[in-house]
Every structure is written in C-alpha cells, then in structure tokens.
Amino acid sequence: MKEIIIKPIGAVHSELRYRYETPRQGVLAGDRISVIELYPNNNFEQAVKDLDGFDRIWVLYQFHLNENWKPLVTPPRHTRKKVGVFASRAPYRPNRIGLSCVKLIKVDGLKILISESDILDGSPVIDIKPYLPYSDSFADSKTGWVKSGLENIFEVRFRKKAVEQCIWLNGEASINLESFARLQLEFNPCDSTRKRISLINNEKKFPKNIYLLAYRTWRIVYEADEMKKRVTVKEIRSGYSEAELKNISDDKYHDKPLHKIFLKRFGK
Image (cartoon, rainbow, N blue to C red; front, side, top):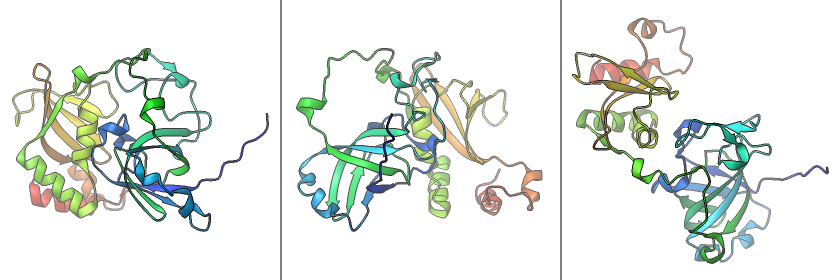
C-alpha cells in the first residue's frame, strides 16, 4: 500500500476542549459558535467562493487527541455490547478521520463560522464540502443497532443555586458546566456504571437518592425522575476534600485557589 500524506487546510476553534464535553452528535450541540480558520497563503480565499450559499457543510477533520485505534468500541448509549468501530461514529479509528455535518453561519475571509458542531478545539481540518439534501439524505435507510433514542431523552433543569454557580465558573474560569451537564445527563442519567456518574445514598441534605457527575475536579449534584424523564441539577461542588485543598504543593490542575474562592462564595 502506498502511503497517503494529507496536509490540513486549517483548524477548528471551539469552546469544546475535552472529549467528554462533546455531544454525541453535532445537532445536539445547539447554537454554540465554532470557527474553522483556514491557513493563509494557499488561495483558500478563492476556494470558499459561493460556499455561503449553503445551509450546511461537511467537515472532514482529524481526531487529533487519539493516539491509537480500537477494532471494537462500546457505544455511549443504546447498548452495552461492543460493536465494530466501522459500525460506529467513535473517534478510535485507524486513520483518526472524523466527519461532521455542521450548520454554516457565515464565511468571513479565511474564517468559517459554524454551529451544531461536535468538533473539538484544535482539530486539524482536512476538507470541506457542501451538504446536498437530495443526495446526502436517505431518511428511510436502516440504521442497524442504532435506535433513535429520542424517546429516552431527559429534560435537564437547573435550580437557582446551580445556575448562579455555573455562571460564576464560566465567567471566572471559562468552565461551562451547564453545557457539559446537559450533554451528559440527557441520556441514561441514572446509570451509575458510567465512568463519570456515581450514586450517593441517604444524604441528609437531600431526602432522595442523588447522583454526582464528575467534571475534572468539579462535581455536579443532581436528581433524576425516570417517570417524568427529568433531571434536576441542584448544585455544583468542589471535588477536593478539605485536606486536599490545604495541600497547596500538590495542585495538578492548578485550580485549588479557584476552588477556595468558590467555596468561600457559595459554601460547602
């Protein structure tokens, strides 16, 4: 086999910096704006001519944070059985190539503004193509093991305290816990076998069973009503213990001062 050498044409700038922040599909990302910035001195100004006449575009890019691939993967929802990576959208692919259909907002020189995107910040862009409904959409196609899952979506609500905490963290440290919580909790919020979810029993502060969703050194406290398909985020907590916060020399994420200010402002 001959080696194929592909040079990126640009890179994506996005608020999504970590893999666990990304929605399962781009259409679940909402109106958050990302920017594809094309590299200069390549005549790409001409290459984007007439692109702004399309509502959607295909973006081919590289899963730049992955270093290896897996022949079998466990899909994030619908099934606990492993499937072949070629039967999934998982990023663990032999050539690390991703494909997303995103909403085109605006073309501004070498900058292409997009939304409804699940592409991580810093992802190298390989190619851009227009989305054509008459040839790219096949609504009656079989989808194998994948079910729509729309009947299983939970509504995610936030209590006043949680809203205030999310706004503060986003303003002080650009930590968007509200978006992360919505993406993580709209499916299977009661499944404590998931990597970032744990169940807490018999906590005096809340009479019902509550769950914790981990985001790096932060913990999102919530209840889930399976009958009403509703999740209620109650508050945000620090993931550090008092002893850990006192140990200033061990600050792997360089965020202990932020946690101390947060606790002083909102309490434990």
